[in-house]
Image (cartoon, rainbow, N blue to C red; front, top):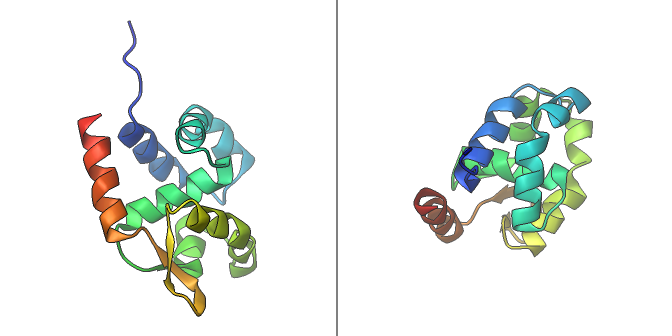
Length: 123
């Protein structure tokens, strides 16, 4: 009997596969099982799953579009295309803007990060 994947395992696999992936169709196919599992668990889109996982990898610190460009190996214009997905993650309270006036910097709130890590580890 195969053991069911945990949230932590799924996030780890997405983080691992997404590095330098350019968010390509090949990457999305390779990580489909994990992305679908996380999308259903969190009630977010596939693209939002990848962005959330990258922010979790960065930890409870400031993340900006430059971090996304370097992590995914994409250009800044492509990364700016994720703005609506970042907004959706903020509305779901999975991310927050660091400064209300500056929507270029976002993070996983420290309390949310700690709570998520605790939940993920006991699962």
